[in-house]
Structure formats: C-alpha cells, structure tokens
Length: 272
Image (cartoon, rainbow, N blue to C red):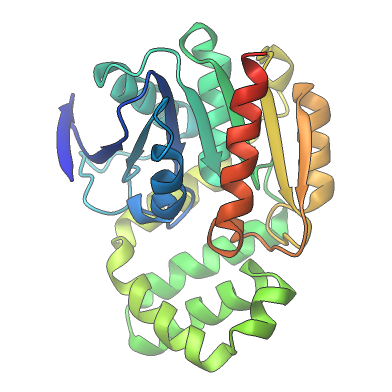
C-alpha cells in the first residue's frame, strides 16, 4: 500500500495492473480498501486494465482533518486523487455510498471519466436504510464486544441474501465479522460517513448528469438499495440495468465473479 497527500488528506491506496484503461473502485459505507480487493485482482489480470483501490475518507488508513463529509466533497477529492495518479478518463465504479459518490463525479466532472458503474446504488436512501446505518454507527460508538456483535448481526440479517445465509450459518459468520468490524474504521470516521449518507439526495440534480456509458447493477435481494430503487436510478440516468440474482446488498462479497464479469462486459461494450 502507498499513501498520497492531497491538501489535508493522506489517501491510502493501491494500483493493480499496468494497462491503459483505468478503473477506479470506490467502497461504500463502513468499507475500506479491502472491499474491492478480490474484484480488483481479477480485473488486473487483464493486460489492458489498471485498477485503483483506496481507503475512502472515514475508513481504513486514510487520514484527513476530520471535517464533516459530503457526497460533493468526497467526489471532488476522489477526482483529485485519480487525476494525480494519472488515471486519464477512467471508468468509475462505486458500491452503495460509493455509488452515490460515483454519480456525483459524473455530474461534476463529466469530461474526466469514460463511464460509470453503480453497484447497489440509489437516488436516495430510504428511511429504513438510514435507520440501519445509524444503528451501525451507534454500535461502533458504544465500542463494546457485544455492540460489534449486534452490528455484525444486523449486517448479516439485512445485508446478505438468502442464498448466502443458507451457506453461512449466522453464529459463525457473526463472530468472524464482528472481529473484522473492530478494525475497519473509527467511531468518528463512521459517524462522518453516515451523516453524509443521510444527507445524500440525488433527485434534485440527477437530470443534470449526462454520461453516455452508465451501468446500474442491482442485487435482487438487496434491502438497503432495493431493486425498485436501482430501476429508478437506471431510468433517471438512462443507463443499462443489470440484475444479479441470489444476492443481497453485500453483492461484492457474495458474487465477486458476477460483478467482475459485468464490469468487463460493460467496458468492452463501450469501445464497440
């Protein structure tokens, strides 16, 4: 891993592959650089790709001045990051909160991207999704082992699809996930992210987004960004809609091969 200082932000990042076609992968709420790792490694096996993954502000080893986060500021800072790393007109793919940032990058810097991919994204998070995310932040602020188990249990029940749950018994998975959550981010970092998520609403400006190459990926068992939300997003952006069957919100972990294939096919189609 490497760091790059941009203004008051020290981004922790990694670049995989040496190809000419750049792909920038943006993690979502509570996610760090590892969220996209498996998919980034698969994409980097193609000689034409180079892939950027990084800890977003509020997660992992990226540090900043701890000012409040907004989707707009995160988009601007990520655009500055990939530009400084010589990613010229890359494809931007974002997951959940990262998908919201991806949409904002497309709106604010349309000439600096080749296309966008929204995975489990939405125009606006529902009240229920916001409540779940707020509860996750409160569990981290509580800081006890029991609270992290509560957070892991919430993610298991609402973040993963039925097929995944059948193959991964809850007690074992919750025990493992609760340990991983402890090190993912600080309580302050998570609070900043959830506040940005709750303030996000693309509906007033989505019609200003004009990106001819847009892919909306919708997990069919997603409770945080339900299929109808993804369908509305595809209609608003005039993008292609791709449904991933048998997957919940955590589709990057449940179906990494399917997500990789979607990205590869989409990028290939953009050059036809």
